[in-house]
Every structure is written in C-alpha cells, then in structure tokens.
Image (cartoon, rainbow, N blue to C red; front, side):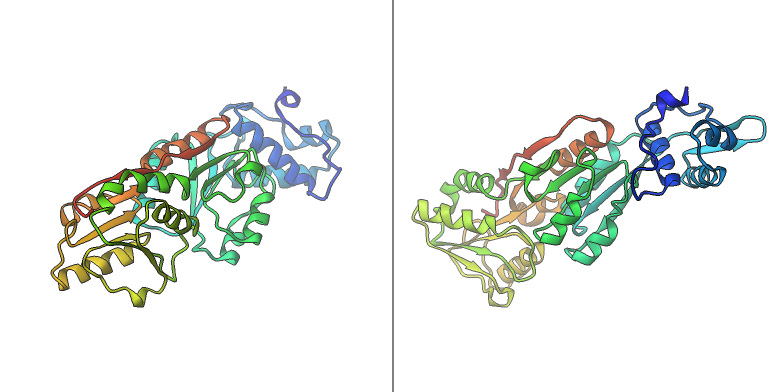
Length: 333
C-alpha cells in the first residue's frame, strides 16, 4: 500500500542523502493527498526491510518527519500521518501599504492547513539568496517577488518550476512556468492615454524617479514615449533633492515618500491640487482615497493579486497572467 503512494525512486543515484529522499517522498505524497491524515505507515524496521535500507537511515528520516509535523507515533498505533500542514514561502521586496493589501488578501484566501513563511529581501542579493532554501522539498510552493540581478535569476532557476510563482516583476516570463506580473510598460502607457485630457490642463509633466527607487525604469521609457507621441513637454527628476513644485505642472510619482514631499510643498506654496498642480501616484492604497479629496493613481488590484497567488498554492493550475493596470481618477489630477 505504501509503495503505491510513496514516490521513492532512484534512492541511491545522486548526492542527496538517503534519509532526505525518504523525507521528501513522504512530504510530497502528503502534500498531494496520496496519504491522508491518520493513515498508517510501516515501522522503522518494516520500512528498512522493504526498501533494503539501514535502520539508522530510516530512523533519521522518520525523526525529521516527526520534527516537521508530518507524522506522529503512539505506542498502540505505531507511525501514522499527522494532520497535514503545507509550508509556503512568500518572499517580497519590502513592506508597504499596497503590499499589505496583497498580503492580507493572500492569507484570507488560503486554506487553514497552509503555513506561510513571510520574508523580505529589501533588494539585497545576499538576503535574497539566503532566504531561498532551494534544497529539494523544503517548501511546497514558492511565491517570489524578485528584482533585476543576474544572481537573483540564477537562484530562482534552481527552484522546481512547478512550485514557483514569479510575481510583480518580469524576470523572463517566457522561461518561467508560472507568473503573475504587472505591466510597467504598455499597461502604464494605456493609463496615461486615458488621462490625456487631464494632462492637457498643464504645461508640463514631471516624472519623479528618485535615486532610491527600484521601480522598473521601463515606466519612464513609456512615459517619454507617451509625451513624444502627444507633443507634451516632459522632464524626469532623478534626484529627490532637486524636486521643487512648480505651478501649472503635473507630477507622476512612483514612491510614496516623494508623494508626501509633493503634498507638503503644495501646502507650503498654497497650490491647489487638480488646478495649480496635477498629481498622479503609482499603486493604490486605502489612504489615497481620502488624502486631499483623493489622489489619482495608476495601479493593479492588489486584492485580486493576493487571491490569484493563493489559488496557485491551492491548486496545480498553471498561472500565466499580467494583471490589468488601471487609472483611477480623483481630484488631484
């Protein structure tokens, strides 16, 4: 009965320790529901005899399975499958308000048997690599928000592609089986086109791209393309210290720190949003609905983002999707 449920093959054919192969085989069978909670499994002596393995090897595997909560043992019942728990890695860049919406939606749409290891890499390659335990079988699923760096791509390439969902940034989706991404280029351009009549109110559009942002540069390129196509005067501010709000100018910001800087300057200079100065912010957050009668935003739906990511954990369905980018117009523009 165990043979039909346990995917234990080529146990001595590579460098992975035998006890770890046994552990991985049980873990995979439990996570795919081949084993059910309460199912009996062979004793250590029976298993070592059936698979021609040393008792020490099986004992080490069973001990690890018990430590990780996959199996239990009692004097009268022997070894059996515990209530199954699935361990998932959610690795994102930083914790911001819009990512909090994503996180809560993700957690609310998961079944109760999923344990989420929630980590931040802060765009640090060393941190990123250390948080990815790519040893076969460590996590049931990986949901990863990467960034553009060769070592990041190499680290991701080591993960079982069936278990990986790449989110937010496109690091080569044509080579990735599952992805759930934003369109920082054409999708952003389409939103600017929708707001063209509003941008026409101003003499110039300034894209604020501060030195500390990791927002994809692709958006700046499509911003310039938009302004050239519609003969709109434009500029890009790359140094946050150079930002000085000017009347009759619309501003696009991808960073909330710069958003608050802009708002502060508008108050100081007594400039009215939507009339003297235009303002468009990237990424919807709950508070942007209420600041200054509302801040116009370009954003995806982060609740939808979290729900689809949770669906990847719950099923084996392939996910290959760019989330739609939308323009939400409020009084600031």
